[in-house]
Amino acid sequence: MRSAISDLKLRRLDVIHAGEETFNLARDIRALSLMRILEDMKPVRHVS
Image 1 (cartoon, rainbow, N blue to C red):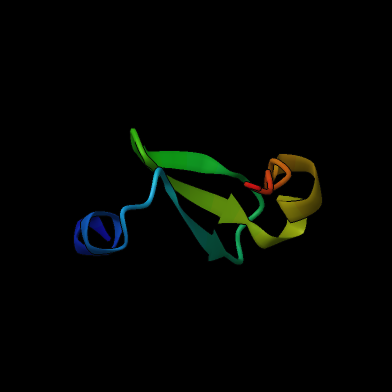
Image 2 (cartoon, rainbow, N blue to C red):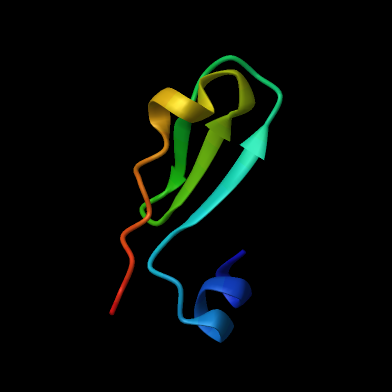
C-alpha cells in the first residue's frame, strides 16, 4: 500500500472490505466498508 501511494503519487488509499465499519489503517490509508461506501466516501473533485 505504501508503495502504491508513493509510486502513483496518491494523497490517500482506500481499501474496500466486506465488514460493517469504515476505519483508518494509517494516516493516509482507510479501510472502507462496502456496506457504507455511499455514506463514507467523499466525492471526487475534478481537476480542470
